[in-house]
Length: 198
Image (cartoon, rainbow, N blue to C red):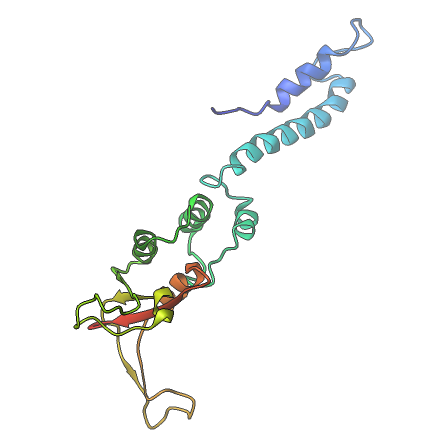
């Protein structure tokens, strides 16, 4: 449904229609009374247009002026993915945050990774029992709450002679993926990440 704002001419006509009849209340454009009512009509039209704009701004898919307020309400920019660039991407981030349903299933976490451009699988671990195949990993009870996100290979970084003493000798992984998964993981679980051959 689209709503059109009333114009200054509409408000001027309405203001003049409220005047009593008679020659003391002229309505012609050059009259002093019309010149007095014109700025009032202009301000009423401006307020009317702002009210119509507010209806548009209430929809995050169309917002422009209130986009930063929508982002604040949704906790954006995302601490993992960083700020979205461009009006369309910022609106999409707000809509995604508002319509996200959350979840704890494997499918949910695979979908989270997919929205960031990653194809992953999830491995769950179970405590070892005497009924399990002897090739299964031997895990104690604590592993019941541990799961691993298996992602494609990531570039491996290595320390050089110019690296400072706090730089690891080798490192790999994807900070964005790990942050997004960890921030959504159930609090009682432990998430591991495997890259390449896992």
